[in-house]
Image 1 (cartoon, one colour):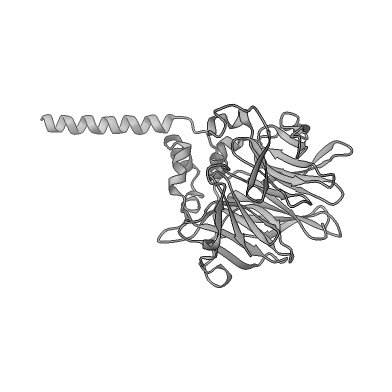
Image 2 (image 1 turned 135 degrees about the vertical axis):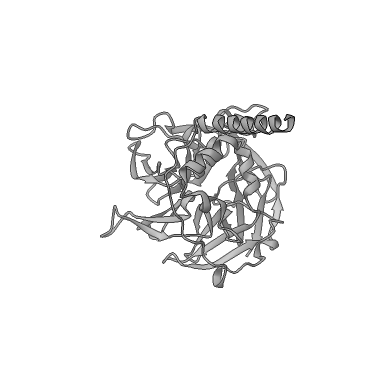
Length: 379
């Protein structure tokens, strides 16, 4: 009798727990989505160890050097998760400025909205840094004095919508600034919700620094991220991270104002896109999506919104990192969107979660979102 009562009590407790979870509101509102099977790792995608030749630099000094740019004197610039901008000259590291408040808690996820998070970083023709800070807005920064000038704030936004998650950045030869707002719902602090929800609330925006005017070029993008202009600036590429796709938006010619898929079904989630000296595009993969015995986790749950909602109710944001395989990868694409080469670190012994691949003085500088170093790869 006692055993039966214990079983009933356990069943009742399980049912109550299940109902409690079921009735909890979910922070995400996903739509069903079906992914293609990821491409096979053959030909240009064959697994290799090219990234094992890379060297870590500034370990413990730079956490999450997301994006890079350089000046005519050979100095390199980047921003980190603690809201700081840095100049790199050889093996010397120089602090430039803090995008938000400079407090001791900077570098922790909870204080990102206070400290700032510089994502896209570019050097304009006047020698100023243009910086897209995820929480504060678009800035022009003097690289020597650190003086900041706000061009457009997140609160101001564009077309009646504030910015929530400024991310990718690109500059044209005439000074036009292109940047992405990854989501008008989720900020960078909750970017994992953005990926899990797989919504289409991102935008491509351009800003005219002379007229001080911004306008939306494309909306309804899936986690709009990195950008790259073509060599002749006829079009711009936009990474849609959450659906493993890169779009092409035409800026000139007979197709001006039109968009098309440049490459789809990538073997990972694309971050920044950078053009090489030979005209190819290098794309950092924030995470790979290689099939093993089962489909990749995000691919498998994508068609089931109810399942996604339930998972998010009981799983803290930090826990999703456990599911990510530490496999470093960046791709090289030609002008037709074909993968012509890939660089792997299959065991993540040098790096993983590659955000940027910046070519500078015969070397490739590999960024990341939150690892405590950058990686330099000799060509």
